[in-house]
Image 1 (spheres, one colour):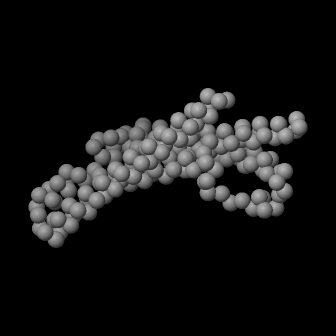
Image 2 (spheres, rainbow, N blue to C red; image 1 turned 30 degrees about the horizontal axis):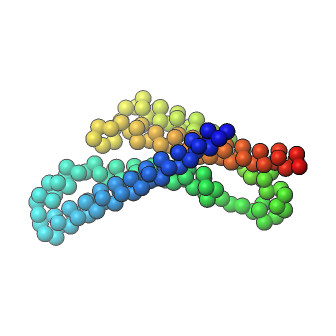
Length: 175
């Protein structure tokens, strides 16, 4: 089990670095687009418009990076238990029942994420069979592979949380 937690920590570091890299890429490409548009529109510099035409792939890349950031961020937040949650039971249940609630919610989230992983893999395989391309002749399915991977990462995090709660419940029964 320690290897799994070590893998999780390594995955957290990788996700953090990817998020930093993607945010920087988004900022640089967006700034470049805005600066070149401004140079062409206000200073009437033709070379800015020509360069903008060669960098037309940056806008769809930035949109794709938003999707990647969403899933990587959701996975990272799930690992820290800081994900979005609607939690009415914490206020209603006593503290001794909270591990059971967490276990039940983790199981439900694993099931939902499992369904989403399956459906997303089906969607990506359909896109792969269709054979469309995004930009720079990159196939669409390569950009969309984050959908099943993202849900798989979130599923992994809920699985770990469920395992922790299960261990906690079992240890509490022993004492």
